[in-house]
Amino acid sequence: MTDTLGSQLKSQRFRQSREADWRRLEALVDKAEKRSLSRLSDSEILAIPVLYRSTLSALSVARETSLDQGTIDYLETLAARAYFFVYGSRASLGERLVSFLVYDWPRAVQSLWRETLLAAALMLLGALVASGLVWAEPDWFHAFIPADMSQGRGPEASTEALRETLAGTESGEGLSAFAAFLFTHNAQVALLAFALGFALGLPSAMLILYNGAILGAFAALFISRGLGVELGGWLAIHGVTELYAVTLAGAAGLRIGWTVAFPGARHRLDALAASGRSAGLAMGGVIVMLIVAGLLEGFGRQLIADTGLRYAVGGASALFWLAYFYIPRPGARR
Amino acid sequence: MKTPSAQRVFITPEGVDLRLQIASVGQRVGALVIDVAIILLVLIALTIGALLLGVGAAVGAGQLGTEIMAVIWLLGAFLLRNFYFFAFELSAAAATPGKRMLGLRVASRDGGPLKAESVFARNAMRELELFLPITLLLSGVGGDRVDGWTALLTLIWVSGFVLLPLLNKDRLRAGDIVGGTWVIRAPKQKLVRDMADESIQHRAAYVFTTAQLDAYGVHELQVLETVLRQNQPATLRVVAERIEAKIGWKRTADHHPRDFLSAYYAALRERLEQRLLMGVRRRDKHDV
Image (cartoon, rainbow over the protein chains, first blue to last red):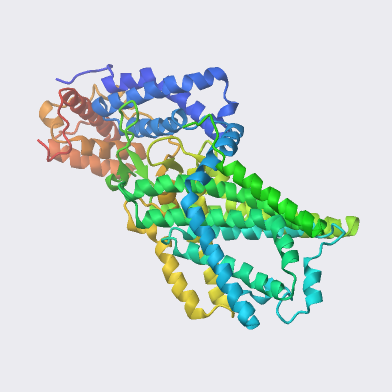
């Protein structure tokens, strides 16, 4: 009864009539994946959504009427690959960067204000405790600061030697390598502070406390030798930016940790994805701040030796960051 | 091959389920190994290049030359460690070279476009999942400053985060959870030929009755499709004998297993597709 000599199956004819469209879409997606969307011509970009929708409808039809598994598998992967282009982000790198600098970054930092205050308080606490201990008993200094970090700036050094370390150097030799080293080191610590937030935020908090403790130990040592004002200038020129960045990194980590522990009304995974987005934005900015801090520390601090001028640069950078992050701006998007 | 347990419902705005496949842990690890190997190779090349050029620059330009090479090396190593994954996953393919080789890509779990901050957050978490354990391992083995027991305990604690993908069905690592992403399979697949195409010339020689065609269902049809595609003479002979026995086929003089199977495939598919149009999907031979 099924003598259908020479005639094809309906599913075969269906495939043959649509195949050219599928292959065209495949070629376009291949091209876009290999290079970038901007390399496609206007007519090709316009063709992709049309071909995508026809492929998607072909997939639905094939699932219901065809038993050719090869075709269905092919259509499934092709439709999925095309989906990510049609519904993916179209913004170019430049547009993303502008949007990041103008809206997204300051807004993310604003949304972290509670965690930022907490992180700042933790750092201050660490600084106060450590300076109190070092003030009372200078040997505590070594408990907070490893030898390779102090570089001879310990309690046993003479006041003159300590004053030396705060001075600038007139020549520019070695500074750019120093700046690059400081930046990469600080950025790695900041990224770690953020990532550790996932462990309920406690390691992030400890990292911030410890950072504050290092600061406090140095401060106590230098103040006890009557070098407090000079140390302030030495720190302020880059420290305002750097400590602010580390505080924000800790705040981003604390936000993640807080959401892990207390996701609120939402599903924990959804809540974490939302916090991860704002914390990730803030962290992207932290890297930018640390580049600025590295430049200020490597070049600015060594070349500007005048304490008053150092305070001025530090104060100006503090004003700049506060205004940039917290002054409300019009033209809100999203 | 597709396994139902890795398949996820993913409805496009057009209302079609894309049935995305979650990447397995093995594929994820494989991709990571390739990526880490690439990073290490580039890092070694960078180091050798910087050393050679640094010596040359020191001879030519003095300390300034070495300093420039040091800056290039420091920043290059930093970018490689932190932005290799970020930059590649932000590209159109949403995959690092390792992922691309294994046909994987990163996607947003909510179906929306993949955002830069999500990719950044997911890769910043590698600090905890990848670099911290490596550092601990190295310091635990070689260093004398870190107490071995402390390193061991920390390692156990950290391995909880490393092993996270084994503990959930979507194979999410900490970075995926925080980034709101998942890693799916999106391999490049070629359109293979329709196995019914070649059967046209054999269909006249083999005519089957309805009863003979009702012996099997969709599952057996797809097994037969695979057998025909692989085209192993021994397998073809065995499968042909099985089917002949099942449907009671009388061999003709010019019997050829592949021609017979090809004709039976087309006839069976036509029969099952006709029933499909009537709303009946016969899953396998036990389904009546």
